[in-house]
Image 1 (cartoon, rainbow, N blue to C red):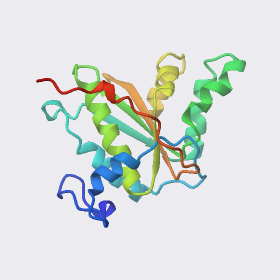
Image 2 (spheres, rainbow, N blue to C red; image 1 turned 90 degrees about the vertical axis):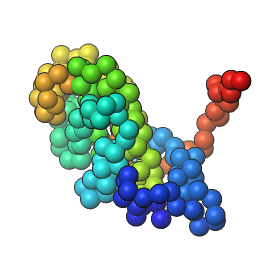
Image 3 (cartoon, rainbow, N blue to C red; image 1 turned 180 degrees about the vertical axis):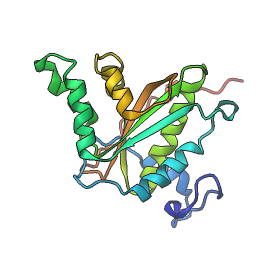
Length: 196
């Protein structure tokens, strides 16, 4: 039902049991850290990306750039560049930060716009929720950003990814078919309040 909708063009539909399919999708999404080896097709990833770029964003600046790596050889090359910047004993830990996701979206923000980090977060949220509705697992990752932006290999990786000048890596999102079914973690409902 949700999988067949075009992003930004249809009203939410009722779920088969009379519930709300959008709310059910939000409540069922989990971060996946163990993936099956098969990749996500470019057709499915394109739909996920279309949903991403239809996210709300400040002044419609669309202050993001996304580079999708779905070729294992390219991903290995990026990992090797990262590993070369760290001592041997740290290299394995650094390169495992992608959690084995077969597809990685590298999301960069426009440094000239002070709200671009928020825009990237909204884009990533849309991508992860649309992925879930299509049966694709995802995980939002900050560690690769820290390792890439703080490493000597940063320039070479940026050249490989081809971001425009003035853009800096903000976050990564891994995609793939889940090889685990994690339970929901508890949420702290004291974090929201109604103010009279």
